[in-house]
Length: 306
View (cartoon, rainbow, N blue to C red):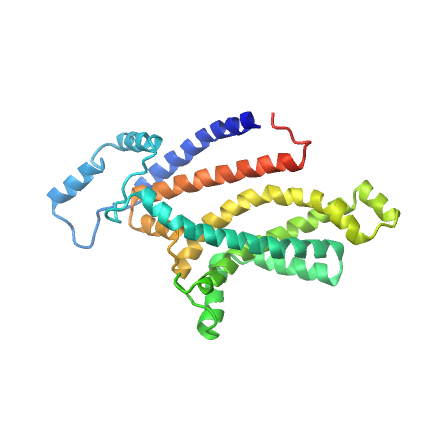
């Protein structure tokens, strides 16, 4: 097992290097610079600033400096947030993004799995069609459309929940969590429905039905575990997608998470902050996928780690 984990981590290094390289050159190709302001600064000061951050050097040399710092665990200082390093900004914003992601994923599982199972157990009936219709709506309407609609209805018209901010306790989290969770609820429901239908058609389940075992017992003992394995495969990328997907949601609801830092960093051409968030998300996605693979192998011994 340990050998497998180490091998996967080493195999992820080239992927991470490609992510860093692409992000570095793409952000540099964007028009504007980190020290462009409405009031141009004196040329001497601008030259000193660029020299301090190696921005006066050729692009490949800048890339080499940055890569060397990353290898030493240093993501550099923020260009715009004075007296803050990129690592401290990520450490400050990630707990907020993590809370949003965890609550959204729990909501997706608590609603998506039962809905999918009910749809499968009532296959081709009204309940099945209703669940599939709602889930299709959840998939087709992106969260950057759903989020303003939720804020408009529950914040502006009904005054039940705050439209933006992160200073009113659990009330501040309700609308962002729902907006983040809705597409994942739809995916989970469709996935578990298909998985349960496939498991119900397998020979050992038909044998159990023929023996007259109660359906509830068959589902609990024989269907649930097999049906959850595809959901487990989906769980890792989905969790990473929810946390990284909060970039848009945090901006819409004015939440001080890591996603908001990323958007503001991109708008301000804060090169080091954008790069730091990209690297952080890249590592997060790699680790989530690895964790799911390990759990998958533990639940299904047929999966080998070699």
